[in-house]
Amino acid sequence: MNIANNILKHSLKNVYFLVGTACGGKTTMARELSKKHGFIHYNDNWNEAHFKVWQSIINEKYQPHSANRKEIDWEIYFSRSVEEFLADKNDNHGSAEYLEFSIIELIKLSQNNKVVADVWIEDLDFLTEISDYGRIACLIAPGELIIRDYYKRDDHKDFTDCIKSLKNPESKFETQNELFRIGAKEFLNNAEKRNLFVIKRTEDSTVENTLAQLEQHFGLKSLNIEYTKDMSGITADMLTGFFAGWPNPPTAAAHLRILQNSYRSFVAIDRDAGKVVGFINAVSDEVLTAYIPLLEVVEDYQGKGIGNELVKRMLAEINNLYMVDICHDKELTSYYAKFGAYQSHSSIFRNYDAQSGLLV
Image (cartoon, rainbow, N blue to C red):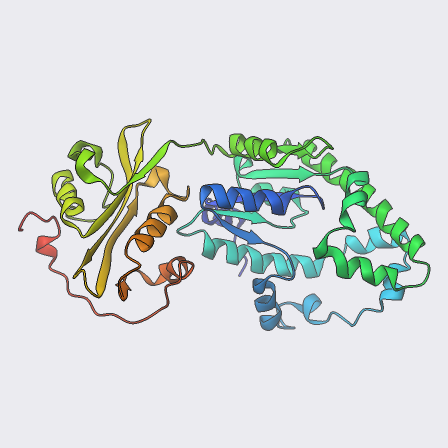
């Protein structure tokens, strides 16, 4: 079964793609965006854990090129000419097979989270069919800058040491340098031809400036969010847009009572809009146990790290207690695992006639 690109595009709507050349800043900027906005960082580095998963499931029937990769004689491999390398680059079936796996991983990760994908996608026509232009950024370094920095990086040490161990390494390095020059020009031309958003790295580039450009392109405005556990200044008219999908949701007044009557509550307030945009609460016996029944961020503010911050603040507030439990949907297991939670089993009772809180 082949999945149409428009279906992939719909399923990848929460993914921001960073593509480009080596040393263009993709990994650095994906890390910065994740840290500031609470995104998941998907790194396409072959040393990452998900690549090891990919290696474990390769099947010759479905991934013939990846399954039949032969042991490489590095002396022969790096002794090739520039022309031979370029001819071989056009036969990228193995990379295409791995990209299928990466796309599925991105779909899984982005169902309930925003994801910034630091991936190698050379086919820009394909990329523009599975993502909006406003979700794609090309980070490109010129050839000479790549040559200056590439061999110094720790994550490229194996590559550099391998060439140094071979015969006539100077000639082999020069071949790689020429490939960097050609590749950088080619990627820039392809990106500009398709009117994609491009950031060209220069000697004067800074992380702060590049981050600001990406935020503007991706529409990630800086929010004036205040977090507080003091409910005295919260009013019912500040509590709108919550309990999404509930057939019989609590009123704003009932919501306020929930926050006020809980053992601990935290809210996230957009001070510019004057409204609460996220909340978390805990109930407790104040001796051994606490239960976190509710965590929600209104839809327009999701994917900006607000939920993460609320969880962190609540866990810090109740870390003196022996037991903290959360019941959640199965797909959120990995979300809470990143805070240190481990999977268990639970049974629940529900009285849906009392879902609105009006019977209390």
